[in-house]
Figure 1 (cartoon, rainbow, N blue to C red):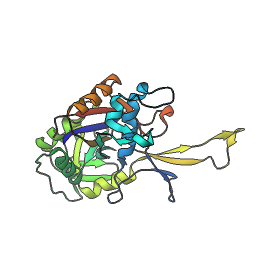
Figure 2: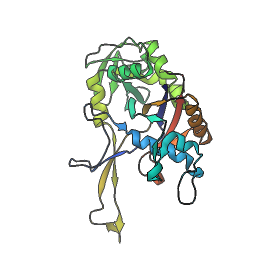
Figure 3: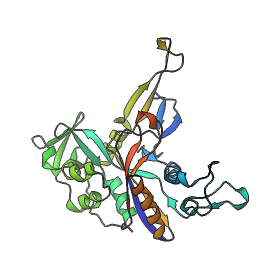
Figure 4: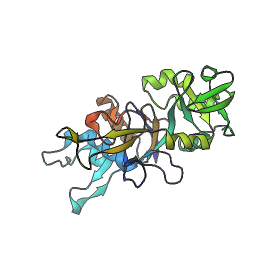
Length: 280
């Protein structure tokens, strides 16, 4: 079985909903049950990727029998001849999350747990730091008198991020912003601090519907969005490497941009997609 890594760098806020909520936020994003990290379900990614082949469908929306989409994603429009696709798509895992910083506007934070997952999924060997909740690994350009200020948190800078960690993250996304700014903005915080920010620092957008100059009854609600400049990655598996080449070609035809989740017409969910076939 061959492996590749698909990375998604959000160009705009993203909402992959978890349905109605009983909490303060009406429409929350999908999260891991055990960690609270936002995620992109594999089923959502599969649908978005399969839609790249929408031009290969007939007027009834059925895929052509010789379409690469049928090979990659399966066939379900004929119950008697339904079959699964050969491309296996994992959920989109969060690796880097943007947080406001007193220096350089913002920092991308990650944590030892997220990096350990990346090392496992990319089959790398990384020397991961053991940090207390007061410590942070960050470039000197983010520091103020030895501290890094993220939102209301003052964290003690102990060292810069190790080069092997930077190298493992640098080539994940080909987005120009990530390539240019990542080395000067990436910071590693404790797992507990990372979990706090990803659970409490997402955007909350208010939505209303106007009826005759006033808010329509029942049409006021708020929606949680993952902010722009987040980095997710998904592990893909396929029996042959040439199947990844078919997907890579189709991504390039679409300028390596995908729209994921809700509210496409209002600019949410636009992501830079990068497929790296050399991570196995």
